[in-house]
Image (cartoon, rainbow, N blue to C red):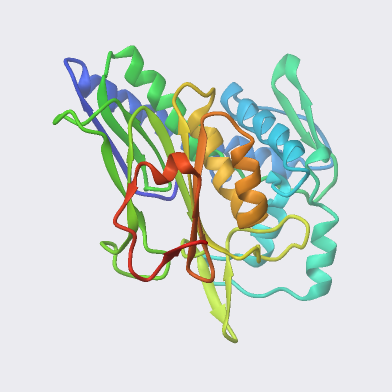
Length: 313
């Protein structure tokens, strides 16, 4: 998952829940990661040639992601993996590709070319050279899976934290209060510098930002969140955003993971409109002008806004 993981639980079966949670995380990492023998790598290697039978978990992630690609009218698309591979952001050979390279790669970005065969959990990418990237789905899916394990072991208080970008708060803390989570300051290298604090309880929380993997060239910040329509890192006026989803919403972890990317690409206005149209979903968006936008539900549980930022008018 390329992140630091922390699993907390209290209760008679806490150790079993945490151990089982880490085991499940290892399984999903091997299935959905970038390792050569993962299901994702096998799908990408067979692009344009044949269907690949995958683990039901991977099939579910892809099916759900394709559905939300359609709902966002392609403003979010897991076939953007071809762009991830082209730009190489976060690797030693990261670079700005030529306009021609981007144009050619864009011809291979289209969620409609993900072909699904539900009877045997098989997936095929219609065109050679296509590639899917589950980076915006897998951690959220893992959160949901660990949450099921916690429920099985009767955990009523705990925190599932996959690198702060995807988490779920089970119940209250041992002191009987909501879990207080610091949202990273998107322009500070200090790990203890926060945009502010949000309190969550039986809710999923996910954060995305242009500070996670990026490089700066000629004064321009190139980050890892791509706009599938342009082939370039999204330029939507957003530097970070956080999504909270109530635990009663199906696939809350996976949905929160996806929604942070979708809202980032949509930008403050369209992003807020989308979130406000959804039940059990709240969000915060930090604009590149340091203005902070929040739904009322988010604002009601938020405090300590950093002085570098201001609420939008």
